[in-house]
Image 1 (cartoon, rainbow, N blue to C red):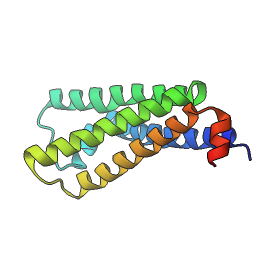
Image 2: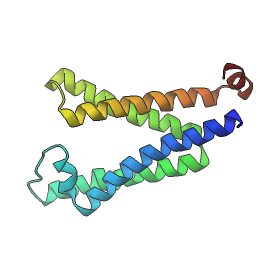
Image 3: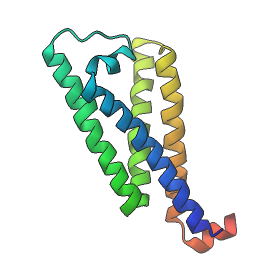
Image 4: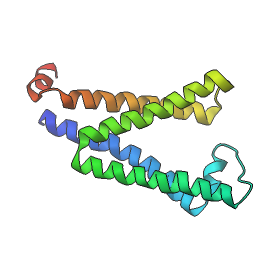
Length: 140
């Protein structure tokens, strides 16, 4: 199979997994914002809190999900860069938390590994897609 086709399939998979994860949380937030906060053991105290979680995790999350799907179809290279930035900044946020507030719980540790891995994979695919095809074939 042609390396360009393999790179395209892998790119769609990485972008798609990211979109799927964000999309699932977004749908949860629209339906029941408290269910999203239950993942980290936080209780929402009032309607403004519900509205904020619906807006950030639901609305903004769905916008990110839609953008990722669009990029998977129209511009995988930019989609990979977006995934690398998004996951990398999530991982950075968790790392800052470790240094400022202390060690993460099981949930945070698991997601730090997932987000770091997705950042690395997306960055690697972005790099490989940036190389001329002849270089990719010679290095494979």
